Length: 224
Image (cartoon, rainbow, N blue to C red; front, side):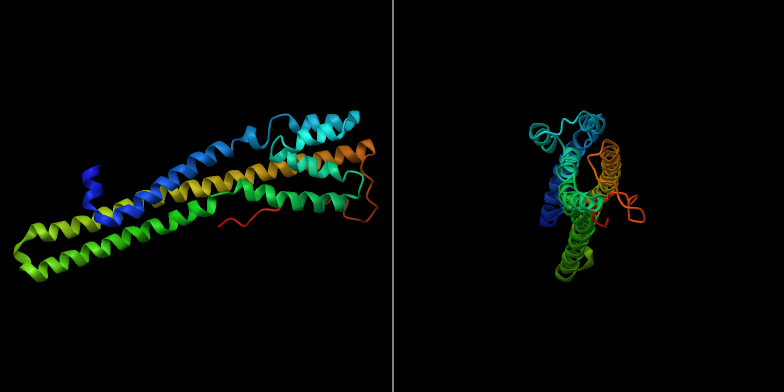
């Protein structure tokens, strides 16, 4: 493996650096985007039970807010539970933008690595070909070893760039999809909570003809 890296010359350095950063991001996102860490099982039902039993005191609210991203959204909805549904929707969307931003942390970096990996490989390929042509200019075509060195450098850089870029792109799309799934589940839990607050009288009923049935949406960044 070391011989292959050395064959790629200095152009392998940024590719190796990108691979290390991509691996670190992938491992960190796998840990941070665990479903039980973002949407703890049973949390939504527990909070709805608090609403039914009128246990929405500051102690419960603070514990909920620091519990998880879902808990932060539910706490945001509960903090304005005595206001109209439109106000709750606005508060949840504002909080949701910050929550989604944290869920998508480092994904832009991973996407950038997926984009520049082949370009770095192409750059190494170009320098390898330039090296080969200079060797031909100096010693002619009679020394195949010098030509092989340039061709080898070009091929190694191209392959290394693709080896880094392909997994980075796959995991970038995978994590984008996971974030979308988690956000949809959080929206469902917030909507169930607002229905529970309406049923228990904590939330004022929306007037007829108003946007009473408009689902609460968590703002999502556009997938790229």
